[in-house]
Amino acid sequence: MIEEKFDAIVIGAGMSGNAAAYTMASRGMKVLQLERGEYPGSKNVQGAIMYADMLEKIIPDFREDAPLERHLVEQRFWMLDDTSHTGMHYRSDDFNEAKPNRYTIIRAQFDKWFSRKVREAGATVLCETTVTELAHDTRGQVIGVRTDRAGGVIFADVVVLAEGVNGLLGTRAGLREMPRPEAVALAVKEMHFLPEEVIGERFGLKGNEGCVIEAAGTISRGMTGLAFLYTNKESISLGIGCLVSDFASTMESPYALLDAFKNHPSVRPFIAGSEVKEYAAHLIPEGGYKAIPQLFGDGWVVVGDAAQLNNAVHREGSNLAMTSGRIAGEAIFQVKSRRDPMTKNNLALYKTMLDKSFVIKDLMKYKDMPALLHTNSGNFFMTYPQLMSQAAQNFMRVDGRPKIEKEKATTSAFIKARSRWGLVSDAVRLAFAWR
Ligand SMILES: Cc1cc2nc3c(=O)[nH]c(=O)nc-3n(C[C@H](O)[C@H](O)[C@H](O)COP(=O)(O)OP(=O)(O)OC[C@H]3O[C@@H](n4cnc5c(N)ncnc54)[C@H](O)[C@@H]3O)c2cc1C
Image (cartoon, rainbow, N blue to C red; front, top):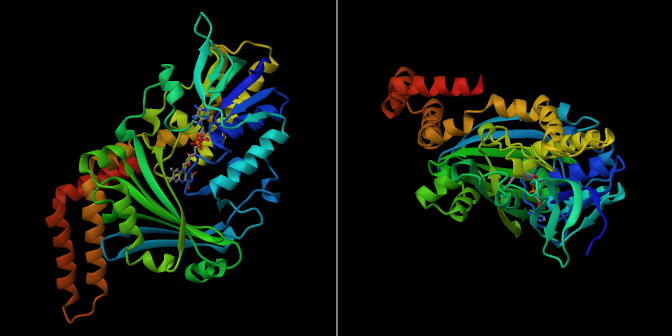
């Protein structure tokens, strides 16, 4: 049994929990971090692109020893139909800068490194310890936690819930609702291993340069979803995710979608001859701004995926997790430094600071986006990719038909599929969502 009282207990050793624990411990606070996994990262799944700026604000010299795979110099956006892709590629030598902006990482290794930094900063980290319950005093203030280990309550002035997307503790304690099926995606992912030089050749990369592909279209069978392929040093991470509500209504299998993506003629050559060593499935919060729950209360704050802080439009999550964890840690430190109690009123500082950050501003910008894509998913993920592919073929195939006829055929295919009014209304809705 742990007798001592802590300044703060952090539940979870993912991106948000590590950011919060590091921020508080490195400022001299007495921090206990509890993680149910065998080691930090053992339960965590990500694509994974890691955004340097947000980690730099926590550990400025992280490049010296963090396990980074490749820095990204190229991004490909693909619209898929069953046999083709229509794409936009952006590659720039500017990304070969001294301090690159985005890296691929492998979470199992990265989280272990981050956790070592948390311990070096002075926090106590206990793995294989599941928090089973929040402990309250008679006024309802959170005063600590109970775990699956023997012993009673472990006391702390404040508890940081960094327990990830499911957030069972928070829901059980009545702090927020379970995420709705239309507000979470289920993603499945595989790791394909290949020699470093083969990956370099296939994607035209030298040294530690990396490339990512993000693909939408018929691959998600009309559901709202996205497939991805990320290059690591000696492996390729590849996966697909769609909204849980769509999986439930269509009865499609995530594994079947992943299989189809791997066997798509545009994807198959990249992973030819690879050895699959890892497989994972995980939820992603995609409800956007409207899904964000109450973020603070008497004796508690919630950060990262548990707070549903995820930007589905830009496919960013770990950076919102790290930033919300850091800001929560800074806010808690400020309250403690003033010797104020960790009450709801005082912890509101976390929300005030978060509102001023890119996290809430970005989520507000796209607040209607998930609903918009969901409502029109058949059009955006089936009809338009097929039409784009037809239009590209019409343009490229030289078969003796006059160009004027081909252009008419392309225009009438669009109008036949969606009608003039349908096309205009989709364009207007998209423009409004992106404004
Ligand atoms: C397939 C996939 C691809 C993704 N790709 C990207 C990407 O490329 N870039 C990006 O920025 N984001 C990406 N994300 C999102 C990103 O992974 C998350 O936003 C990020 O991991 C959230 O961090 P977190 O710390 O809030 O939660 P998590 O990383 O999920 O950590 C939560 C931790 O809490 C622990 N825990 C839970 N309950 C308890 C308990 N009761 N007691 C003790 N410990 C507990 C868990 O074991 C876990 O370690 C992806 C997500 C998925 C699923």
